[in-house]
Image 1: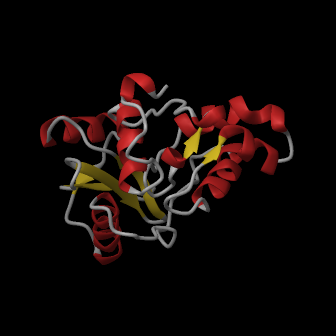
Image 2 (image 1 turned 135 degrees about the horizontal axis):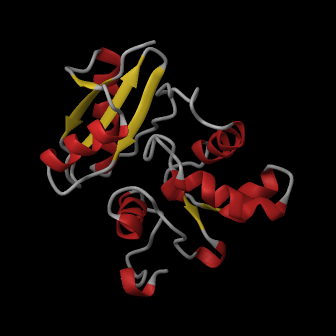
Image 3 (image 1 turned 120 degrees about the horizontal axis):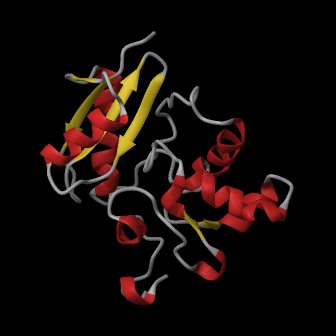
Length: 182
């Protein structure tokens, strides 16, 4: 079994973390209240994972995530993701979502149609909620019908999703506040 390592790193929106193994990134975690809480979350999610200095490719991924969260037009599609533990259906959904360009969005229903069955929209939403690689697999770019936010299972919930979309230019400044965007 390949050992899993993780690292915490600072971003414009707070401390984030990612974990890697022999086949790529295993997990990406969005900001937590502080480094201590984030470190505890990583150890809970990935028992046995060891905090370590990231190797060059992982350091490059961290730099890309930091740049994206700072508002730079960065493409993270080159980052290798370990999806061995991800169900086949979710992999199909993630492949479509990963192709959504920065500054754009799709709905759960649009992804379901691309999968060949518009009735799969709810299953698409469930797959998004199970995404182990937020930001790199940009589930924040997937919305509910009518441009509503839908859910967001990453730390910070819908407010983090809204913030990410705003950073990427996919959410105009005149969008309603968190309480009006549901």
